Image (cartoon, helix red, strand yellow):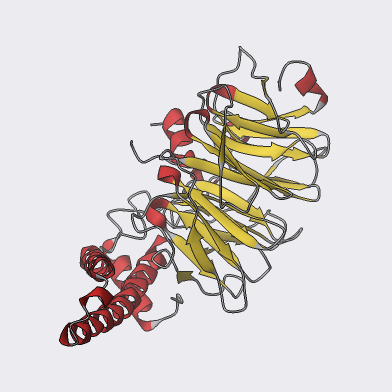
Length: 408
């Protein structure tokens, strides 16, 4: 199955360790000297152009805090408004790369991520953004993280190998875990290969697909090829932790959510799902078994129930924090890209071909309109309004219009 993520699919339809470490600074210097050919349009250096037709652009995510709303999309275009009753205003954005996701911390602070390893921040509610991180710095983090992994894995392998020798001297071969030793050797070889294969453009080639701040200080960013970044100081520094989570194949990570117990859930391609329990000692990640090999584009929580959805209308539910999952028959084969709660019991799912699907916990109602087949990339329910983004801009409707046969 081809590697696919929500943001890439939407665009195809439309078009086709701390940052300040010494090794990171050297890597950044190397990248600056070699990346100009790759970033040939200077999308990381040029500000997004102000455009009178910006509302008709491709948008990939929508978020809100209280009444304030932000939409993000292609060419660095970000729109903001203070309420549903006010007009959209194009924000000032320092890059022209595609922005894929946005997350509010409060009414003033929000974070956004996108292609070329971009991380943006606003402190005025979305009107002005600054670039705090990009793919040029990401290469340095990748290098530092791989070096650390090699040190750790080498020590683990040497210890396991030494224990095996001792066991052999005592003729206690049953105590040798050959499979574990082989697995450590494979992981070590893989890390060494990745480090040797690392290029100056490695970070620029990675797109971020989602961002979530659980507090004003702690945030996670996930993306292509298993990329995962963590900050504990409000984005002043970032650590690459993609090699520390249960994703040895480096599958794309597409979405993040949290539950009331401060568990953090991440889903991605090839049915990948994992959860981390927050603690003072840091996150402890473990893999979840959804028993599915297709891409998952989103995950949502309602009380004690988790819902994950993705490729070809596949959707799954868990009521035990991801330990077991039930496949739900949605009755559709459209890709599901996004979802939001209409109320405490009804979930509105949207996706490819103008899909609009309502799930009440027992049955699915397909309310898609026959005359609208444009992909819907995101949905948010704000008060009595349903706001969607897609490949031709944005649309808004009242909840009542759902009863009348679908969103206009």
